[in-house]
Image (cartoon, rainbow, N blue to C red; front, side, top):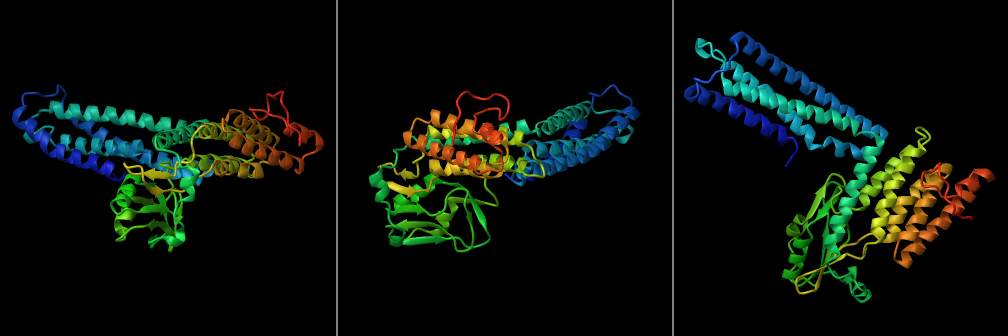
Length: 421
């Protein structure tokens, strides 16, 4: 559902109720009236209607502040995440519904000179007013949630949710063995190639079930050239089909590949790490110079990597009910995750003792917690690279010695274990 439809539903419902309910009340429940003078009722309803319009303007101002603050303080990629908050659109809808229904109720006060104030319509206005105030309080709380700790925690929670959903589902499928990996058809032997045409679009989600079903129906294997999070430009190869006779319908294939204007969290465990790294390196820029925020971002990054380090990352194969491989999707390796998480922070934070110490603690923790020796060895290589970065930095000898120590707080609690280059 498009978000702009949410307030429209509220508006449509309030107009329909405003046209129907007061008439039904006048016809069947006219004996029930509100014990309030006509003048007072009209004044209250007018105040509610005018106040809702003013409150709507305040909400728009709050939304603008949220968008600007997130773009400047954190990352431009976080803007739409907060701007698409459904609570904002429900609030606008509730305020509009309260305004509209108040006007309709006002029209039925002292209807035909009766001197009566409709009880149930007035009660509905009061209920809508209370709901609007609760939603307004929720929006104020959203402003409090814009503090850096809450933002980083929210991104980390989304990352943990994505990892759990993706890997819990895909790990139920058999892993790809080396023999199967070697038997994946070469791109030169493809019987069909699907190419993107149009403006640049990003792969937001794959309907794996639909792709597997199409491949099974044609006894084919679909090999994705692009993965979730990739941006397709004119002429980009989306996928290749092997063994299909006749060829698969391009429209059906594209219908199973959901494209969007930008990356999303869905099916993309790399995206929350990307956002955390963006916040960290922006905090490390000379214009901001906030290494503590980078340290807090590393806290969340380390947690996500520890969860990934215990998972089976070779989940790019999807089979049909008979066990035949039908879909091959490129998936990031452990080294890809390490490069995404640490390369840019290491480069931009090389002159910060606090960041170097926290990075060392994160890498050491990953090395100790990863149960797979090959992954632990990859982390050790990163740790050795970090030593070289400190050794060739512009820090003096004393600062280099401090930067070669572990500290999960960055600066505050030096671990006993140290590394030397």
